Length: 143
Image 1 (cartoon, rainbow, N blue to C red):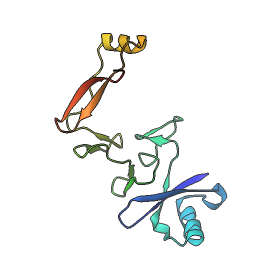
Image 2 (image 1 turned 180 degrees about the vertical axis):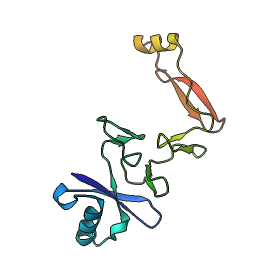
Image 3 (image 1 turned 90 degrees about the vertical axis):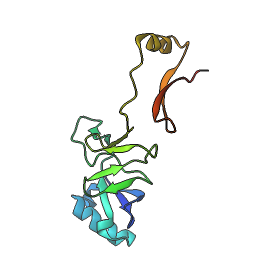
């Protein structure tokens, strides 16, 4: 089965359709099939990979277009990436991982003590992004 994202003129994903492989032997034939059967322009159907997330293929294959397209995600034709919804207004696109990153980088790593407490289920420590302060805040979500 081949998956195709239907995009609008703003490159926003409206829906994702599945097409039998016999009707989508490649992207162009899938686009032509969808244009005929949906009355939506062929160039506004972009093939997407169900198995690709954050520019990694979950079955060990070759990642395709950064992420599996979802309703509301954005098609970036320059970088050939489907961008998932932006989690915070300050976050920036990281092309290599096809994901959004905070302006100060990844969350810190939990200490071994925090990890042990999580494993013992006495606490559930996580770092949560604080948009106002532009910081990663350590939070016990069990409280």
